[in-house]
Image 1 (cartoon, rainbow, N blue to C red):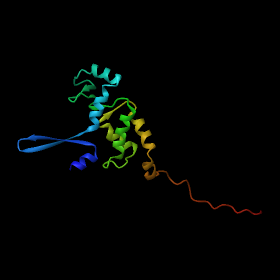
Image 2 (image 1 turned 30 degrees about the vertical axis):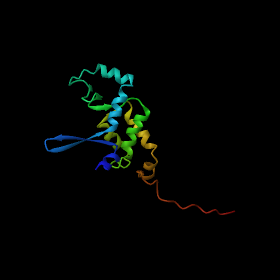
Image 3 (image 1 turned 30 degrees about the horizontal axis):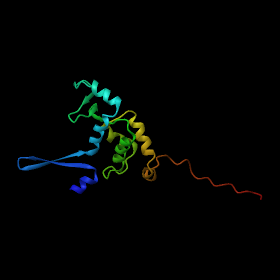
Image 4 (image 1 turned 120 degrees about the vertical axis):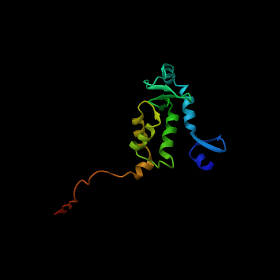
Length: 152
């Protein structure tokens, strides 16, 4: 079980509850995102303005991370966003989804500015995806025989 969890870059914590132990799986990347939010000036300004009311679209979660409509905000750090995209693309559970599926999956948990365009660009550069993607266009027409030359 521990090797399975390590393979997915997850942290396993044990919380005793009477005689039964509960396991909580938490993505390590979420902790990295929350720490990196402190380095992004724009997100820090939004965090200061987040009032925590139900109507507000910006809130600070119980873990201290800034959330937009309940989704964790990823700061403008190239290596962090690339790590999130790599995890979504190369996960054993995902198996190289297309840009639409990858966007829908990531949209449930994360938010950053221009997210959809960056996902489309990332997937278009994936060599594995390019090799296995199906072509969805109709054949142009029936094959036509070439005319034979009458002279040399």
